[in-house]
Length: 378
Image (cartoon, rainbow, N blue to C red; front, top):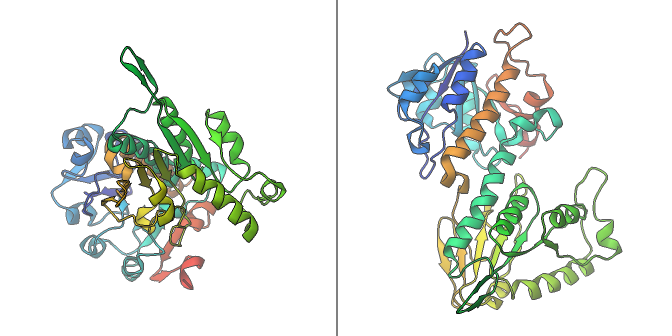
């Protein structure tokens, strides 16, 4: 019987956990034995007693949980002491930040681990249930609106009272991926007037279906700005200048701006300039969801709220899903449980097929080496 270990997250501010009592029960039913470090789920409101009731064994320390385990499930990359406790050939599945955290990859390779970067799960139909980027981005988009609303000194919906009318807040979402779409939906539910922009023409319909207005220079170049595969084409300098002018005029009128643009393996693109920040009214809010990759907003700082000279607040909080730890853990744990099915053969025995298209795409270390093509030359 293959053993799955789950340990407490040690990175500062990380409140999520890689398994919940729900997924422990499912893992044990699938034929795995689960060992959970004591206190692993406490920050996400999952007590040890619930793990035991679901069929897990409790270990006093991370080392005790990992020693002898065939699989280690984590939210973030394991620490050096955890890697040292791995047996050769053990599978590690976590958000490994592989393009930036080369030292951890090297350590995992030296330990002989078969490491799976959850960020590299391919976006194909059969892997959707394993896609942690989507599950966590969805919650990040929701939380970004909550954070922005909390920092904003006014109400979001229009309110008509005997003492007068309060105008609805104007919220602008830059980037219409999973996080952006959820931010649009949340801001709309809270009563804001919402607009959104993206470089992909196909997102216009998605934005409008949520009751928001799409903002773009919709000329012939824009209408042909997407490849057959759904990716954005590089736009001309002339188009970029027209779009920048339109966006700049729009940002100056907004109460809350939420930026969501991320490019895997590269620094986040700058979407909001210092001049655009300076054009906003006092009390306006910018929420930068890309802050852990350098940020979309000029002047944003990791885990800080920057108040500019003109009274605009730039929120640079990292790990927004961790601020909804119970739900974020539940979704991520389900991603991992779905992944665990690929470690079993048709008879239910532990026999991971690393030639499976999903595992092959996400595997970053194996047999003592870094094996992912994008990392060998990076």
